[in-house]
Length: 421
Ligand code: DOR
Image (tube, rainbow, N blue to C red; front, side, top):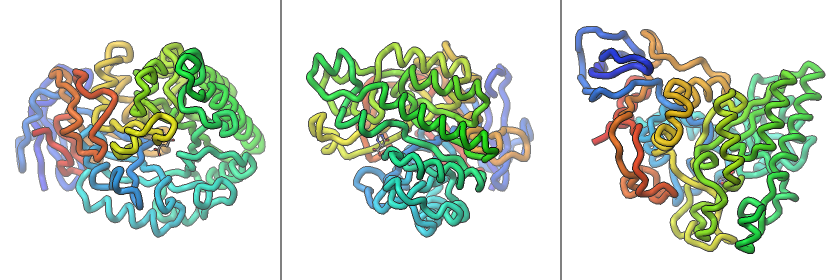
């Protein structure tokens, strides 16, 4: 199948061009039109976005999301590839589940799925899962995300084993005993509201511990690679900076929700804002942005975490944690921080940067590259309308907000995975 996309501009260029795609790869630029011709409407073309952290809830939690809804939502958000988290029911700790997920997703025609597998059996944190077999089945990385790795010795063995397989371990870095039953950031706002707080130290202490484990393995010449998920505090970011300065193989991601929302939102008592790690202070959010600019934050990730409306309508103490917004992550970041970061840097944080973290080849729009691309409408402002979401979670903190930078067209493996109607 051949597709020509006309009337598009590459990032950083004012030239109107066209790209031709054939057999799943980019055939070339500005060739004579052939095959299906799609009007890019003057949009900006970039490699399709890469999501290193999303909860698609399959198997077993399909009332919240499933592969079809989650990967369609991702494609609508401009993503070509999604790394799904293994905290499902059952947990993705068995090679047969990894294989089944990849197989099912490949027939859907939306974003490509790269499932993460659990680091430990049942994500219980005690006994390593069969990492070699999981890698062989196609697991993209190992993580017990959703749970914290309380047993440091098991984590060390996991880092060592995964490292010997050339795989990364990514961690939900919170100390469970310090976090305790905190439902929001601990500070003046939690005190004013009388809600149990989750202190910044829960994250910073865990990040410090994990960095020291990597430092030791590194000193022993082991290939361990640690990725810290959804980093939320300035203090933990300083620790990551320090680790990088020591030359340690430590990377981290931040989430748009930690950049754009703070613990002040919890004054609403609305569990839509309950997330783990929690929304922090404006000072933390400001420092995360500094980290994005100076390179101490490696990439962006949404941690798209859908739950049912009924679950999120419970009170703050009982509602599950998680914010779902994979469909609007790029427009949110472009609208809020496009000027501060610049388009080129922002696109990098959503594309090449997560690829670097995952150890994948750099995405490319050159002839011969896999045809994964997105056409972004950087001009038209549109309100966020959750009723239109492809995700099953048809609610979001940004409902009604006017954003620009919406995807017009997402192509994955040379096929149209999303086209705005
Ligand atoms: O808020 C969160 N929700 N954080 C996590 O780490 C897990 C996720 C979920 O699975 O809902």
